[in-house]
Length: 101
Image: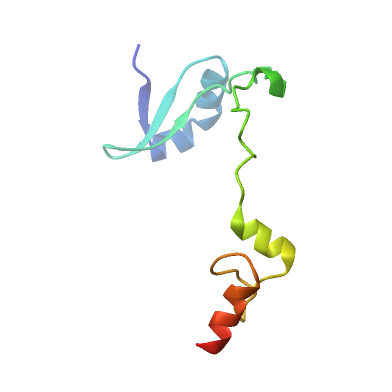
């Protein structure tokens, strides 16, 4: 059964009745002319979500094995611009090249 549609003025006048019907499981649309604006519907009971242990997630074994040159430079204190944002390769040479330019 499609939901009943009420215009705003009629819904305002019959709001208590519409609210009771919605809480009983009925879906009601409130429209401005032919344009639907809102839907009154019952609130669904919250479902129970179980947390999945990490062992059940299929993460690759080598996820964190790759060398991250940006993080290595940050860890070494080799940030080479005025904002402290690392740009370039890790190592002392990258900072010297930018200073010369």
